[in-house]
Length: 53
Image (tube, rainbow, N blue to C red; front, side):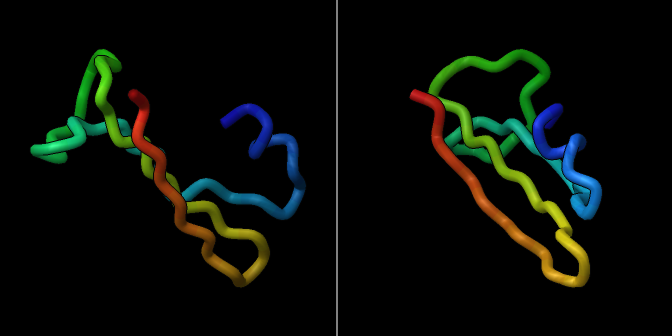
């Protein structure tokens, strides 16, 4: 998140850390967890996710 915030055109829409199976949001990261984010670069919205094992 810190790296993205350094980019002048980037605006973070959301960052989510959730249980990989239930998709319930987690307060504490415990693998396997799904990290999802959406970032706007100008008018383009980039969406990505990764599973933390």
